[in-house]
Image (tube, rainbow, N blue to C red; front, side, top):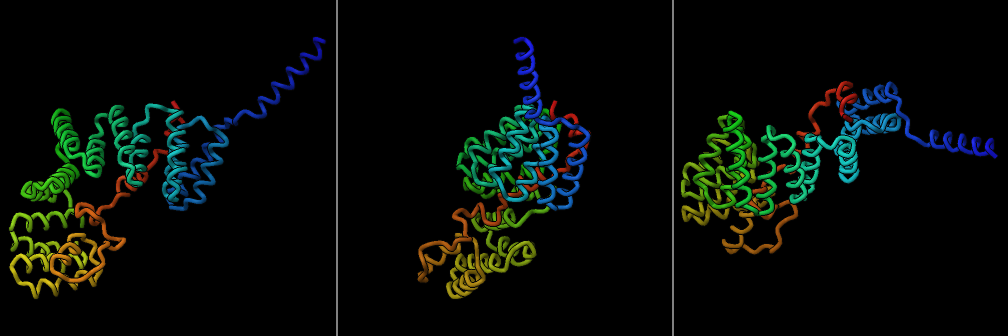
Length: 326
């Protein structure tokens, strides 16, 4: 009987060992390196195949799951990417980089409440990463939580002062966006003048910059910016919209209508152009075209920018893979 029990125990141990995950460090590192190379070369299908082999060989390393999440995000499979990032967190809970990526992933899908939660968790782990506050502020702006966004930006000011860090161009851009949404257009102008000294403005910021000049009745300055200074950053339809706005404000209905028609003909994506069309008495479909956002604030805004930046950051390679699970 004792011999039989010993035999059965041996069989069970063998079965358990056969079903346990492999932990072949050298094999895993080899395929991780290949996955990383394929990822950097934007060969994402091959990268996914390599990282799956990596994890099959060793499923204890958080960095492996992080790279898998990056690959899946690049492939547009956001739900699977979120699962991979979550798997990374189960292996290394103190991982602010992955928490930030989860925030960016949700932000890109316009799940702003979830994005805020992840940004807050990431900042709690690493309060030197002040850009997390700016991302959180933007998510609150999207949620129309303007008072909260203002408080978050105040936190940014306090932390930057404490850490002796200069305010970034992104701070001025974010504050300008909040001020635009709350109707403080003179402050928008001040912010973006400061911001453009630090970094070139993108189309979204140029649009709200010029619009703020119109909204503060600085018509000549706004017209000059739209037709000359910032014209290379704008689409032709944008320029026609601002010309139309100028002429309507100058009570020149004929030229205003002409410019508005040109803006719409060229596919204007500014929602105010369609409101202007209704006010001018021109018949139109009550619905906005599909590619036109409802809020001027978001015209030309890139909701994938945060994610593109965070998953585009280079992995540190083999050393990171060895230590990421700790």
